[in-house]
Length: 130
Image 1: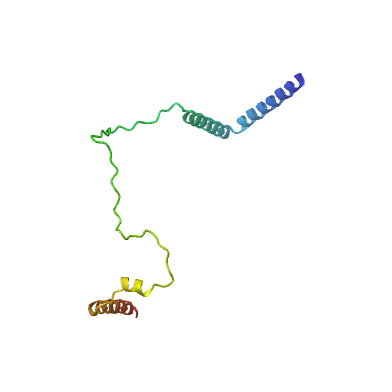
Image 2: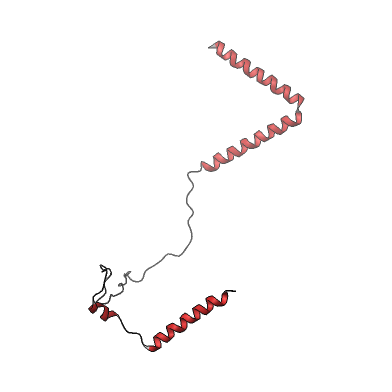
């Protein structure tokens, strides 16, 4: 065990001698290195101190307390029409009776309005072309 301690002691003495020799040869560089090491150590100590604050209480936001004068009531949802189906099975083809129930024959007024809107759309597209 004493031999091991002697080896460690010799290593530290050699390291100390090399550092002193480096300091005597390069004073400015050694001062810069030493000061940067000190700054890094201070930053690490501050970082550890800031992170280790576990007793920190959450901040309480000041505000008004809500006081209810009446009991909260959930409003009724929208009423569905009597013949409303939320989902249905679609068929490939409608029967004539189903088609007549939902199909209305357009009048001259509707056909003319559709024609005008189509013409306007075509003119807009063609007018943009060179």
